[in-house]
Image (tube, rainbow, N blue to C red; front, top):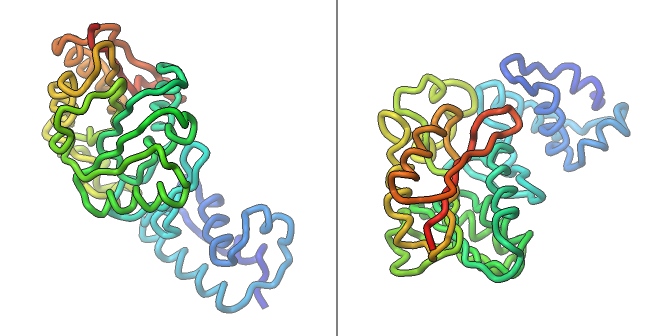
Length: 276
């Protein structure tokens, strides 16, 4: 006979900084219950089928596979999103982009573009908060486009359009009041790429050339042709890239260029405005 409390005590995830949380999320999923159920009923007997599923989940986690990929879902902003191994796992740091965008533009009508949308996290979070905004979410990976569209449909967000496009290639002369992106920004030789959860995520969503700035350079160079006069470009980047990104924005003619810090005190996003 196996009970919830003993299963959690036996779960060993030494390589995870969130070992207890990981185990609780995996057991709750195996049981089809919430985490609060585990704490409310710690002496509840677990079926052999659920215990086996939990053991299989634990084995995958011990191999380094992220919990989000094991469960196929991840929370972001106020949303529960489907995720898959062909897209980046949405992270809390990226919620800073959503916060800044909501502060930047009024709640009235606006055209917004999310470049490299992946699971659709940024676009869907913005659309859920601003029903009057029309948000276009693009990605060059067809599987990501399909995933973002599934998330859009499940969340019933009619003010989002999901499109297959490599950055701006399929957008023609469409212009936006805000272009927002969390592009790849890790250098090709960065040792973090072969450590922890990151090694399970797609390199195409992470790596951007020798210095990690290739996609940021391209977006900054091409964005003015797709921004309305006075429109904003907002970008997430690495913790040590803010100065380089600000320089690129200034050189391209953006004004009001500045960066904002994440909860860890790192300059995590930078933005600039196209002159009116």
